[in-house]
Image (cartoon, rainbow, N blue to C red; front, side, top):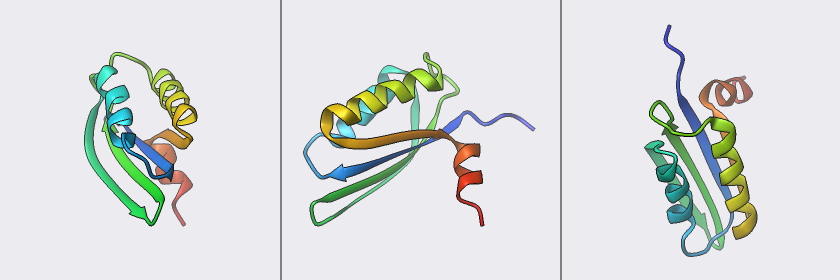
Length: 93
């Protein structure tokens, strides 16, 4: 069975202009491909989840996580990135 190179990126926080662009820019700079994205705003609160393929990425997951976390801190958001397998195990019943 081939090992998955997909990660799940979640973003939560107060809505503001540029959140999706900021996250997408970091992923593009790492040559990571966004496979799917869902986002919503509940009044002033923003929530987004992305599935991202790292098979062609030019940076390891830990470095991408560090960049996303730093951007989240800069923008007052919580940004997490987890390998798909970790996400699945954490959310199974």
